[in-house]
Image 1 (spheres, helix red, strand yellow):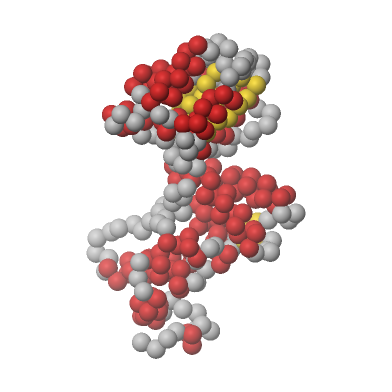
Image 2 (cartoon, rainbow, N blue to C red):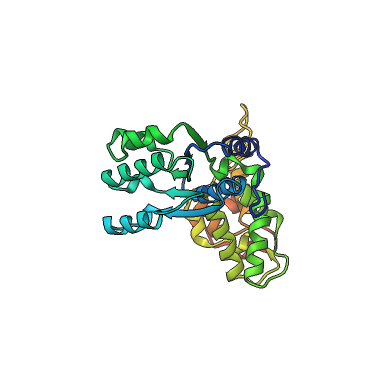
Length: 298
């Protein structure tokens, strides 16, 4: 692939890349399913890169941007007269029923002339049952499917994405070689990413734009990030015969390390008040000797 680097270090994404290569030789439509931010439009670009010889043209349309039937018709008009194109269609389930039939007819009539990559959320079967998506359209496009994993399912790929995104962001902001600290690297590996790749890229760009630092750290993370949940991959080993107090101490200690000692952020993650975490820090002697004077009275 010339223009698009596909990060595939995790077992899931290696299988995904094999699946894309296998289906790229066909002329059948491909149904790409993935949550928000998993890179559905990027996968369309990869399909095009693998099939340029047969489909040199490329078009991306997003019916989710249409706020009326008239705007949907404008998008359809932009798709007319194409030949030798790979056309990525996103959010087609938001079309009105008659427009979905129109899309079905286009896919059928243009087979061999153009190839369609149709990207949607994973819940298409439910949308068919609810009458939101035409069953005939679903049947037509479901033969070849590509399922995109969430970012939390492909954690082995995260360090490569961080380097890739920071390189792109650094060029835009005219910043040379931006790095991440060990603590931030650990956080980025363990965060849950409800917004997937899109969220990771926005998070890094926000930190770069707000902090003129060569090495990003957990102290540069936006406070609002801690109102969302994350998963702690390694976790604590639960064994019998261990007092609950010891587990509580270790949980608080690990979260303080994660947020570079920021007690307010740690309290948000743990779902407790700042006063409670101050009391626990004192009880478990988790503060630095030089920092003890900053603790409020109990």
